[in-house]
Amino acid sequence: MGVLLGLAAYAAQMVAALVLTRGLPMIDRVHLGLAQQNGVTAVILALVFERDFGGFVAVIAPAILTVNLVHAAANRTADAWEARRSLRSAPR
Image 1 (cartoon, helix red, strand yellow):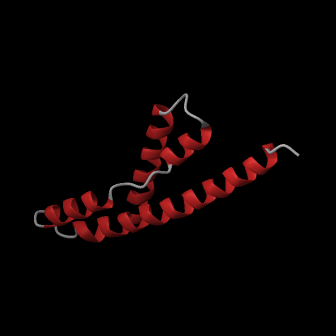
Image 2 (tube, rainbow, N blue to C red):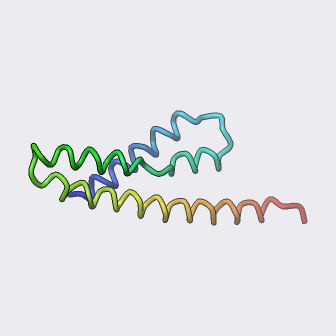
């Protein structure tokens, strides 16, 4: 459940960023869409809610981990894509 929550949070942030950054260069839009979520806030909220909702941290912890892993992989992929794109458009 935590992994699904992490993926959903990441996807929602990506869609919102891409919609709100219309007009910027494509690579800037991609990097803003792939921006990392604020994990510290999520950890604090999880600890606060754990008092009232037992098991809350057990769901939030995998979600935070998932968001960070997706962030690392997605940005690495975006950087590689931009590098290939730059090579193709470079004058020969």
